[in-house]
Length: 263
Image (cartoon, rainbow, N blue to C red; front, side, top):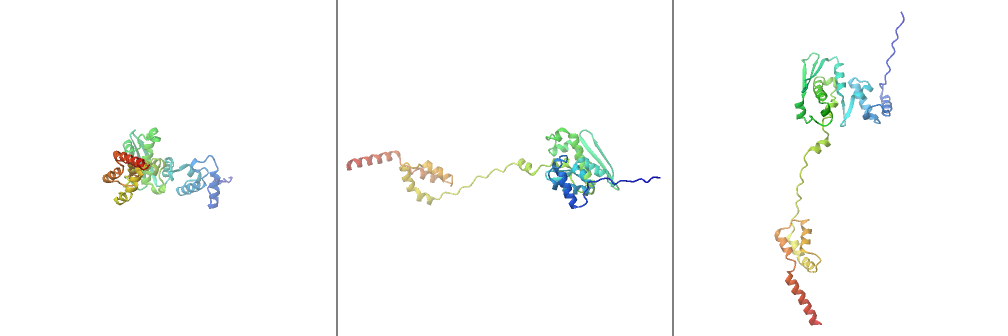
C-alpha cells in the first residue's frame, strides 16, 4: 500500500508581531481588500487580532469585520456562521410573517430562546421608512435585528461581545444627535445700567456738541443703548440737551445783532 502524504494547507496567518506588521502593510497596498482597510495597515492589524479571538482566518476577518462609526462590528452572515459552527449551538431557526421577524435559538443544555423584531418596533425606533436599507429591504433588516438580539443574548461568549454591523449602522452618530436636538434659544444679553453720574458728567459736553451740530440726541442714545440700559428718565434728559428751535433762532439773531453793533 502506498503511503498517503497529506500536505499542509497554505495559510497567510502571521505567526508573530513582525509577520503581522508586514502582512498588514502588504494587504493595505491591495485594491481588493475592503475599502475600510485600504492604505490602513493599523486597521488591518486590529481586524486580524479580532478575527483570531473569534476563530476567523485573517482574510475572513477582513471580510466579516466592518468599522462603522469608528466601532468594529460583525456583518450578520458572519455572526450566524460563527454561532452555528460553535459546539455550544444546537440550532438557529429564522422566520418572518411579513410583519414580524423571529429568531429561535437553542444553546446546549439550555432552554430555547426567541427574539422578535416587528415593523411596530421599527417605527418606535424611528427606522421604518428610513432612507437606505430600511426603505429598500425591510424584511432583511427585520431579520438582522431579530438575529442580532437572539445570538448576542444567548451566545455572547462565542461572539466576544462584538455588535452586529446592521444594528450599529442604525445607531445615530454624535453629530447626528446634536443636529436633531433642538437648539437652546440664546438668552438676551443683559446690559449694565447707565450711571446717572456719567450722564451728569457728560451733559454739558454733549449739549455743546449738539449745539455745534457735531452730534444729536438720537446719535448719543443709539451709542448708549448698544452698551447700557438707559432709563426713560435718562432718555428724556438726553433729548432735552437739544436747544428748542425758537431759542436757537433767537440766540442766532442776538449774536448777529451784537455783531452789527460792535461793527
